[in-house]
Each structure stands twice: as structure tokens, then as C-alpha cells.
Length: 98
Image 1 (cartoon, rainbow, N blue to C red):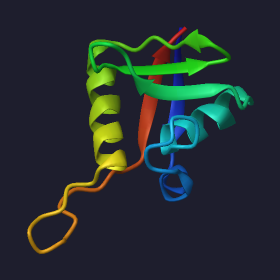
Image 2: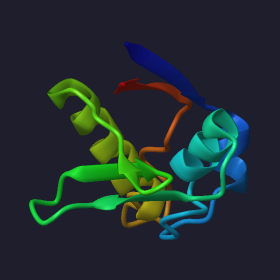
Image 3: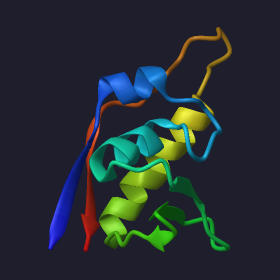
Image 4: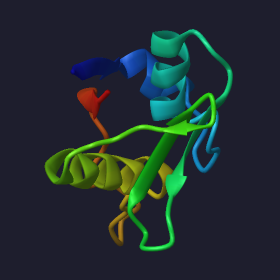
């Protein structure tokens, strides 16, 4: 079964950059699973790793890339030489396999 989890603009605005349990994805996971026990990070191979209640969530390769790009831009937005943000994160639907 695939679970669809919306990472909303509100999650993006209220998420804390660099905080594995208060970032935008973590806020969406908290809301969806109705728990505070969430963790968003990367594994040994720098692949995104999401867990809820100490259980790792499974994603396909395409979703891993989407999450990885989102995490990178959310935590360290790209800034050009004029300090203008060139790319920003946008809401997306996270797909996890249960």
C-alpha cells in the first residue's frame, strides 16, 4: 500500500532548517501519523532516511531523489552572488510504501 503525505506550504513556512524532527517533512509526518516520534535525515550513503515511531519508512528510488533534493534546498537554499534565492522548495506529495 502506498501512503500519500502532503508536505504543505504551511509545513515549509513553519519548518526549522537543519532540524531532523522539526523540518517541513517532519511536520508533515507528525500530522499524518499523529505522533511526535519522527526523524528525517540521511543514512551512511547520504540517502534520505525517514522514520516514524522508530520504524523506517520505505520510498522508491524516484521518491528518494525528490526528498533528497527537497531536503538539500530546504536546509541550504541556493544563493547567487547577489544574494537572491535562485531555487526554493515547493509543496509536494511524499509517497511511502507500507
